[in-house]
Image (cartoon, rainbow, N blue to C red):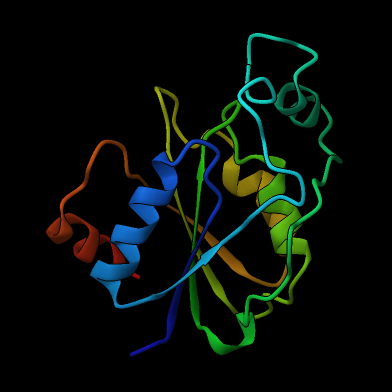
Length: 157
């Protein structure tokens, strides 16, 4: 049995709830990916082209600073990485997280929450940040997935 980590970024709490329940169902450790500067409601206004999230997502080289880099990635075989879908991909802070550590030989399983869009090109946009890892599109875990569904998802990997 491999050691698993659930690492997640959550701007509004939705992804955090799913991540916590996934970690419990999978018997995995939990790690929150936090920005050095927290996102405000105004920062997340996707209808405002000058909002922080809009500016970051337009710039594919954007790498928001992380609050810390204390995850012990070396201790895990499989890392579930969760995030809300922004503009059909992962928020660029996920690239920041992947670039902060050595994921060589690791399996990264993506999970996301979304108000209506799918993964889009999330795997492709993240693979450049962890080129020596295997990144797989896991699942959209919207709503309140029950423990059995989360356990089945985790056991698949």
